[in-house]
Length: 437
View 1 (spheres, rainbow, N blue to C red):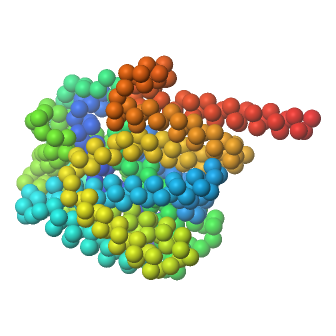
View 2 (view 1 turned 45 degrees about the vertical axis):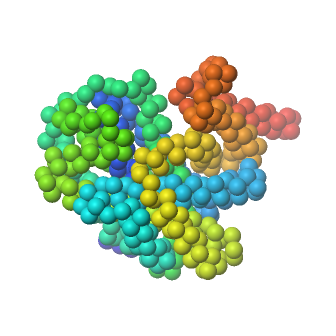
View 3 (view 1 turned 90 degrees about the horizontal axis):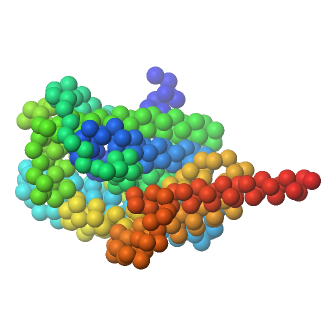
C-alpha cells in the first residue's frame, strides 16, 4: 500500500469514528423497531440528515480548508463569530457529555454499578489525555480504534440479520420519512461535520502527514468523506433493519424511558447475535464509539479557541480542560434527559447548519453573500415556530403556521429557504443581464 492509499484509509477511518458516537449507535435500532414495516422509509429520512448532509459538510470543508468560521462569514463576520460560539458551546454541553452518559448506562453501570460522577471523571480524564496529544489523534483513531469498531458493528448486524425470522412489527409512525429526518437530527452528525471536519484538516497540517498542497488535501478529504459516508450508510441501514426485524422477538416495556428502551433493544440484539459474549462486545463497542466522538468534539473546540488567540497552545489546553469539566458535570445526567434538553436547541441550530453546509458546497456564482444572508435569515425566522411550539405549544402559533408546508413535521423552514434561494439567484441573474445590455 503506497503512502497516499495509507493516508486515505487512515483519514477515512478516523472521520467515520469521529462521527460515530452514542446517538449513532443507540438511536437507529429503536427507530427501526418502532418503524416496523415502514423501516425503509424511515431509513431514507434518517440518511438525509445523518449521512448526506454531513458528507456535504465534509465536502464543504475540503473546499474551504479553513475553520468553522469560514462556513458563515459570507453572511457577516459577526454572525459567523456568534454561530461558531453557539456550535462549540452546544457541542461541548450536549453531544460530548452524552457520550459519557451512554457509556455509563450501557457499558459501565451494569457491570460495576459505579456512580455516573466517577464514570464521567475517568472518561473525560482519558479524553483529555488524547486531546492534549493532538498530533497523534488521526493515526491513533484511524489505525487502531475504528477498525475494531467497524468489525464489531458488522458482526452484530450480519449475524443478527441472518439469525432473525425476518418479520417486522406494525408501523408506529404516521410520517415515517419525516420522522427519520428529525431523528437524524439527534445524531448531531451535521454539527459533527462542521466541527470534526476542521479537526481532520488541522491534523493533516501536521508534519507527520505527507499532504501539504491545497489540491492534494482537497482530494484526500473528499474521498475520505465519501468512504466515511458509505460506512455510516451501511451501519445505519444495518442497525435500523436489525431493529425492525427483531421487533417480534425482543420484548420492550413501553413504560421504560426511551434510553432504557434503546439500551435494552441493543443489548437484546447483541446477545441474540453473539450469545452472552454480546454483552461484552456491546460494552466495548459503546465505549470506543463514544470515546472517539468526544475526542473529536473537544479537540475541535480547543482548536477553534486556540485560533482566536493567535494559535496559543495555552489557550488550547485551557479550552480542552474546561470542555472536559463541562463534560463531567453534564455527563452525570441520563442519556434521555440530555436528548430532551437537546431537542429545542437542535430545532433552532440544525436548520441553519444544514443551509450553511449546502450553500458552501454550491458554486460561488450561485452562493453569493446576498444568497447566504437571505437564506440564513429566512431559515432562522421559519425555525422559530418549531422551537416555540416544542417548548410551549400555543394555539395562535399553530394557526399561524399550519398553512406552511411540512410545518407539522417541524420542517416548516425548508420551502421558505428554498424560495428565498431561488428568488435571490434569479434576481442576481436578471441584474447581470441588465448590466450586459
